[in-house]
Image (cartoon, rainbow, N blue to C red; front, side):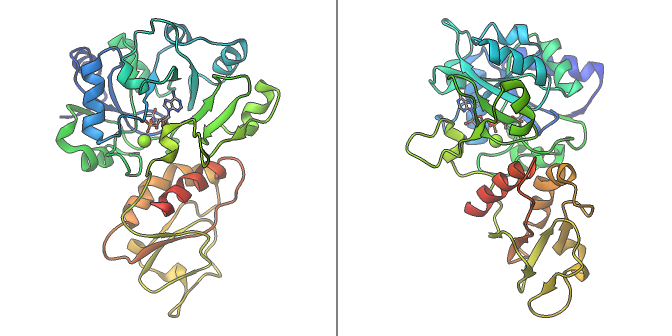
Length: 326
Ligand code: TXA
Ligand code: MG
């Protein structure tokens, strides 16, 4: 059932979650598929609905730092980072407390746990009403681009979800930054809106990004097929090939089509601009929805213009590289 944001629907969803049901809820990053993280059966339902490999652990969403402290051990640094960036799009990987009550399926048997306090007021209200920690991966079938609108959720999961709380487009549009703080040196496992430059003043050093392209990837999700549209993606395009659609960034003035003409004259179903003004935040918010829009059988592929590799551009390029590999 699709509901809108009212005090009643928040209460209905909170009750459904307490009964072990699944609800797709908006966060500031992407829509999440939420379930009671204390309920093993409810968490298993998430994996089933998404077709998610059991080895890929979930993020536990909390309404406060105090709540997170019931489940994981915060070092002094971890507490400073959480105090600085929560609520917001930053997930922390921390050692699980002994006798942590979170469903074992949620952490895929690891000794660490991913925790995050979302800033979206709707997500906050649901967490507070449910009085539960909520396990919530992105609300899409495993391997698809993350959903940034309620329409994406219903297209992707349909009847597999009991409730969808429809509240328009997510503001950030990219999944949270994942920061591993379970060992002495902090490492970024997934780049996002909170960048290494943002983290530097709090950590005292610039955390590195571990892509996981080695023997022992720390984040199971890094190695799995991800974010892949159906069409082939061609990165750093400087022209448009026959039949291709174009995902542009910034000015198109000088871009040509191989078979003649200018890219700026492509019909709108073949041309989306992540940000006419060249703004990386706007581009991040548009990335997944524009990829989905261009991913139709009328196009032979999607050419993507190069995105500046700084700030949140790193996160955009990370998702695009994964989409291109898919
Ligand atoms: O913005 C977000 O983070 C969204 C919203 C809904 O909060 N959630 C999200 O969840 O993107 P998901 O499941 O699509 O991505 C979680 C990522 C995966 O790459 C997973 O492997 C990693 O976090 N992860 C979870 N627990 C981990 C752990 N203990 N150690 C390392 N990586 C972990
Ligand atoms: Mg996901």
